[in-house]
Structures are given as structure tokens and as C-alpha cells.
Length: 107
Image 1 (spheres, rainbow, N blue to C red):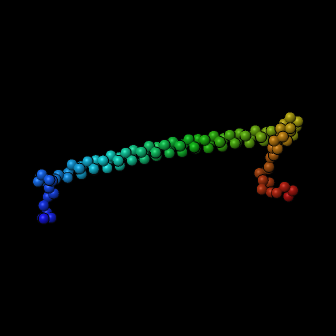
Image 2 (image 1 turned 135 degrees about the horizontal axis):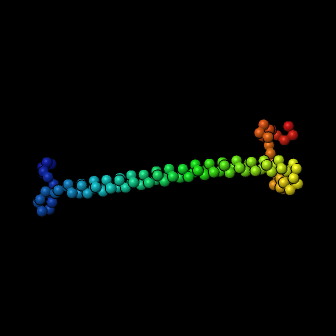
Image 3 (image 1 turned 45 degrees about the horizontal axis):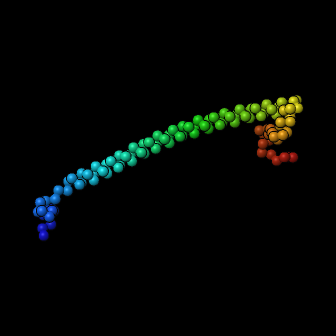
């Protein structure tokens, strides 16, 4: 058998491999293109989630700041108002001065 001879089918005609090669190539291009589309969508969804998370963190920081101010006002009011003092004692609300936050009690 001659190695340079073209492939032949059972009918004796040469086999054309161009069609299957084109179909396989088009299929591979479709799969890779679809993966690129999905990756793009996933990237966009991650960017939106990151933006939402940043907004939620900002909202949480604002809420914490407002709550700290409210509790500080309640502690100050508890010095003169018996109802405020009852709330502070019931929920054991304390204010630690910023310079003394790390010291042990009694020092």
C-alpha cells in the first residue's frame, strides 16, 4: 500500500475529510464562544454583588455610628433621668472612654 495514496471509501472514491473537520471546528468555536459569554455574565454579576456589598457595608457603618450616638446620649441622659437610668441598668449599657478601653477593671 502506498502511504501517499489518498484515503478511499468502500466505493473507491477518495474520502473528503474537510466537512467533518469544519463541523468539529465550528462546534469547538461555538463551545468556546458560549464559555466566553458565560464568563462575561459571571464577571458582571460579581461586579454587581461587589457594588451591593459596598453599599451594605456603608449602610452598616452609618447605622453603627447612629446607634453609638444614640446610646451615648442615653448614657448621658441616665445621669439625670430615672427612666433612662432604668434602661441603661436593664440592658447593662456601658461607656468606655477611648483611652481606657484596653485596661482591666480595677486598674
